[in-house]
Length: 129
Image 1 (cartoon, rainbow, N blue to C red):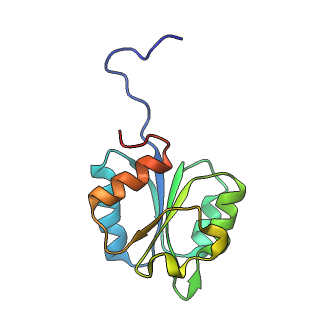
Image 2: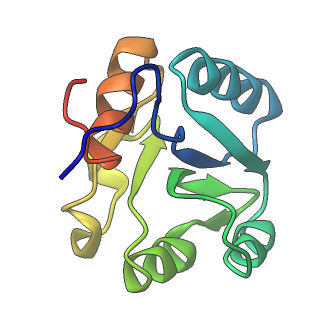
């Protein structure tokens, strides 16, 4: 199998950010971009996240657990069914995540770029590139 031509890079994974706190969403968006991932979109509501499933616009997802009085778990179930990698980003840590989603990474808020990078690389199947 031939290698990639010199200077050729694989496309950056596209990350859907599901977060209802706009300030937090903007911070996450900045960190994702600085880590050489592409932000496919930022959605603040469960309904918006569900609509994002209709296209082919993202490869990975970061999910805030609580979205304007609803939980993100129905969307997480859809992602699982479609085998789209995702992680939870929450101030509550693992204790706020149902057992059925125990295999998915959880970033405890607040988190920094090092933790985010590690989690996104793991989701993208690139280890600690």
